[in-house]
Image (cartoon, rainbow over all chains, first blue to last red; front, side, top):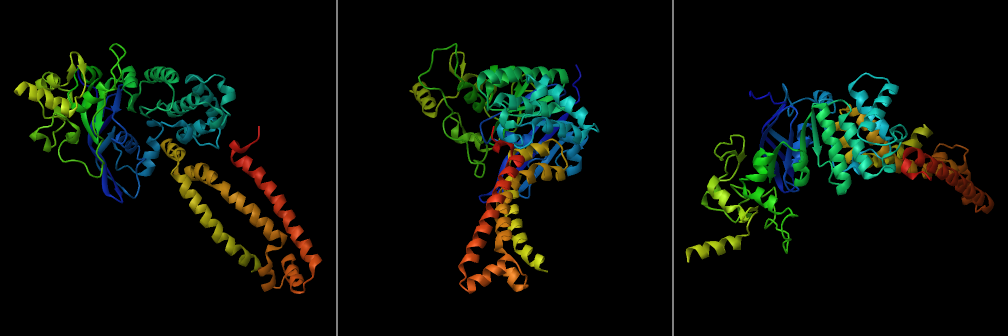
Length: 357
Length: 133
């Protein structure tokens, strides 16, 4: 099968912000490609640079304090260097974004219908009445009952789930090729979350759009992602298909993430497993592998930054940033038979001591 | 000339207040949404930023305008020798003539009350969240 042409190509993206504490590098050499119709999930904990990466693609992080490097191609357009006018053409029409907090991401003093219609009219020459009809249709498609009446509602008159649906309608309104969903369901409770994800997946499939799904919820990821990129402290530490990441994770950070999901099919642990320590401040990150201070399997090579490359035999698309060999990883990541997780440092030392003496 | 003199002070005050409000609003999430929609910057500013920054301005305006109409333009009227309420107030105070002073205070209070009502109605049109149901 010949590889399809990627719709979005990001290479060595770097984003830094000048702050009082000096230059903070929020995104550090992120590269990925997005194929037509695929769902790429970007996961990682808060502050690891996933949202900044997403927003940078649309030029929403531009400011006097921001510095960019690398390149991001949408088709033939380079997004980082694009002029505001060029970006306006792309935003909303070609690449649309769904923001996480619908309560603050919708203008509180404008009717929702108006906010959707406004986007349609920014990109297509249609009359007010036509734009309104399309808005109503869109609201129906995202599952808002009674859309004809709700179109004149203000955001504060709707529930969180309904507002998030409006956000999705807004993003879909001009049939974009790429959707960037920045934690689209984090502000919702689980039942609504499931409903909305279901609807979202359906609509995306109909539209044939590619999706970059930014989230820290691995449950959401398993539902809809094709490929996953795990980010830590501004870098992608591991990238691969859904199955590769979930069943053959290579980076200790990914083990930690997977290990900290409560499992229904196992006896309940006394404490939910965590990754020891805190993520480093982006202003003062450790040299080499950023996970080094938290990683129980750290060894002398870790002071050098491991490149993002394929280390699993036979899986050319499964990339990671960890010096350990694939066999070592497969052995170290099992905290008990069949369970993947990240051990704590003292546990590792105990087993080492036991084996040696 | 008197108009210019009177407005100069207010222009200064109001542009500073508006400036700080706009700076507060411009970092709000929905402004980012508006940009992400691909709206021209001008529309983002007018429809999304300006409207949300107007509320404090309107409340200030109600008080100030009421006060000016009700005799607050005292200095301007004296300097330019306009026969207005403000100058009348100044003269009456100078002569310790109590009844006109009382009347003028009432007069001023009346306008402040009326304009506060107007401001409340304006609030509701500017921000639907304030409307009574």
